[in-house]
Image 1 (spheres, protein in one colour):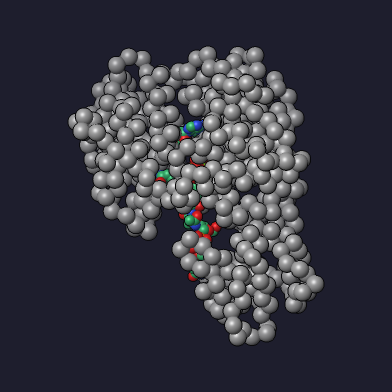
Image 2: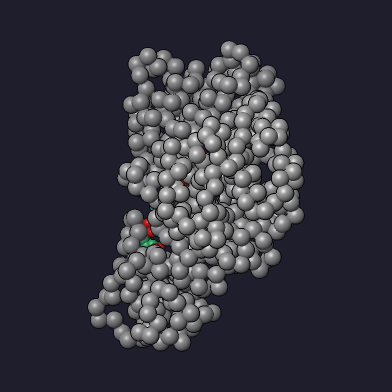
Length: 486
Ligand SMILES: CC(=O)N[C@H]1[C@@H](OP(=O)(O)OP(=O)(O)OC[C@H]2O[C@@H](n3ccc(=O)[nH]c3=O)[C@H](O)[C@@H]2O)O[C@H](CO)[C@@H](O)[C@@H]1O[C@H](C)C(=O)N[C@@H](C)C(=O)N[C@H](CCC(=O)O)C(=O)O
Ligand SMILES: Nc1ncnc2c1ncn2[C@@H]1O[C@H](COP(=O)(O)OP(=O)(O)OP(=O)(O)O)[C@@H](O)[C@H]1O
Ligand SMILES: N[C@H](CCC[C@H](N)C(=O)O)C(=O)O
Ligand SMILES: [Mg+2]
């Protein structure tokens, strides 16, 4: 329970606020979730306009409404608060409602097209092992110390987010590590948070359905850095051609990492094998369990952030060398007949290329690489032909299949992917829309020592088809098929 005037601090002129002493039981932006005494936020979304649900919210017990346009002829019992941007106001209000939990611990946000979950998971595991109480908000799961809380989004909505941070503070957390998606930045899910640090991994093709242009996508990422306070650090990857852009207008302390450029934190890959990575990191050679050159960037980012958070270099490297990555990221199993099966969350052209080039780098001889890949429905359509093209370029056989078709027809998504395949490449491509059948076919095609890559679903435990999430687990299916076939 909070007073309206306390929640509205910073979002409206309190002198003009009607009923400032009104008690508010909950903040809500979905009319279907209103409880008596709620403050309802009418947000203009991507599918609907929250203003259309104001009546429904009031009927369900909302006592006040934050909106961009006050509807005509409303009864005087309800307080209406007009703002320029209701989703921005929601960010500030959520932080007020939970008493600014982000300022009571050290909050570090990670943004970028690929690597967020990996970096956040490594940071969480590292700081736990260093003896701290910590929270984590990630695509795979949310964590508060040893407690696991299921995640629905990469970055939760501002109410859920502040509530989770509040619980972290209550449970004594010193640090929180969170993924910051570009959707979250644009939709103000992180507005009102006090960050102690921000990391940028990279930016490549994704989410153009939402941002429309790459430039908008880049601006969204940059906005996160533009909004940091002077007390924060901004750590960016200088090997990414847009890495420096993130620092252009930030007030935070600027820090950099790179494998190829001059930077504050430097590393060099000495060995890259299935067993792990040997890096020379700050003039020290250390083996890590993670595989693939892209993970050298993730590890270096984690190392840099840990040092910027005043941790001891030796201790950090010792603990990091023991850490495994996030679930479903270059997660591999070997069949009795020595077929290697890799489950990876690569769902962008860049990630597919990275994981396949890593496989090429570390395979022993002329083993075949068989890639099973699909593209999400109701998401960026322009990445479909590119992902198929990259898969064909780097694999000996490609099986095009489904990856959460959502409301779309699986065969149409496969046709969109096929548009990126040259006539020459056709001979190595099969299309099997049923993902389980596609995995089975890959297992039948594989000879001993061959490598099967199941791309795109990683940790996901479902296949989303026409609004229903059916249980589906790439790793489990691969394990079963390996027992039966290989
Ligand atoms: C496209 C997108 O990002 N949508 C997110 C957004 O919804 P929206 O504001 O567009 O909602 P809308 O459906 O247009 O409705 C507008 C408003 O009317 C309200 N409403 C609607 C119906 C009703 O009966 N009553 C009512 O009050 C809604 O609650 C909303 O406030 O805000 C919601 C609350 O935060 C999110 O749940 C929702 O995520 C949808 C489900 C989603 O799939 N999002 C994905 C694309 C996403 O966010 N992904 C990113 C990045 C992924 C990654 O790279 O890892 C993530 O952070 O997870
Ligand atoms: N630093 C990196 N650079 C390029 N590709 C990477 C990097 N790290 C991971 N990848 C690839 O991207 C995939 C997704 O990695 P991860 O889950 O860490 O990224 P993410 O940014 O959290 O993705 P999402 O946006 O879906 O949450 C991995 O499975 C791997 O194939
Ligand atoms: N979290 C990301 C990746 C999902 C990857 C793939 N499994 C899909 O469903 O498209 C997104 O929302 O774009
Ligand atoms: Mg993620």
